[in-house]
Image (cartoon, rainbow, N blue to C red; front, side):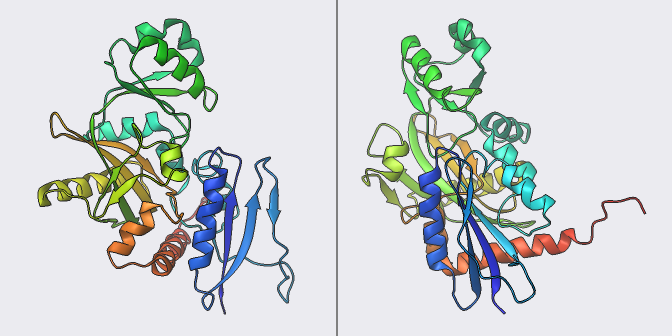
Length: 327
C-alpha cells in the first residue's frame, strides 16, 4: 500500500508564493510508486482548500504522514506543528519548540549565544521603543540591518547607513512584525549549509551566495535570477569543517529535528564566522540551495524526500513509547 502523504502548502504569510513553488517541486519529485499525495492548500485568507479526495473504503481518507511546506508565519513558527501534534499525526521537520525558537530571530540568537556560538551584535525594538530609537540603537555602528523578528525569505529587511534610514526601515519592518531586530552589518561573504537528521544530524558541504544586489534580498532570491552560487564553497578544509560544526551546533541549540538550513556570514576584515539564522522549512524551489546541497552529496531530491519522511516516522514511533498520563 502506498504511504499517504498530506502536503500542506500556501498559507497566510508573506511567503505564500514561495510555499506554492516549494510544494510543487516536492510533489513532482515524490515517487508515485511509494506515495499517494493528498493536497491541502491554505489560501492567503487562511481558508483551507483541500483537493477533492476519494474516501477510503471504510470512510474518510486517512493520513500516514504530513509534509508541511509552509514558509514563515503560521507554518514555520510552531503553529501548524502544534495542530499536527494535537492530531497525533507524524510530520516532516522540526517540532513545536524548535520551530518557534528558530522562527523568532531574537530567541534563536539568544539560544545560540548561550551555547557559545558566534552571532553579530543586535538590538530588539518594539513599537514603544520608536520615540527613543536613536538611544536604543546607539550601541550599534552603521551600516546595520533591520529585520522583522518573525519572517523569512528576506521579506521586510533593509540595510541602513543613517538614523533617517533606520527610522524608515524600522517603520517598514513593523508592517510585518511587532518585534524588530537591528543587527550590526557584517561586511563579507554569505554562505548556507544544510543539516539533516534527528538525534545525530549531519551537515552538507556549504555553498556560497554571490548576490547581484547589495545583499541577498527577496528579489535576488526569487525574482531576478541573477545571484550566483558556488557549490561547494571555496573555503579551506578548516573553514568548511568549522562551518559544518557550527551548523550542527546551531541546529541542536534550538532542538531541531528533520531538516534545516543554517546561514552564515564570513567577515572580510577579521575572518570571523557568524551564524546569521536557521530556517527549519527551507525552500524547495528549483533555485533553492537546501536540496541542491544534498544533491551534491549524492542525495537526489526523491531520495531526500524519502529520508525526510523516514525521519518523521522514526520520531513518531519513538514518541509512542511516552506516557502522557499518570500511571
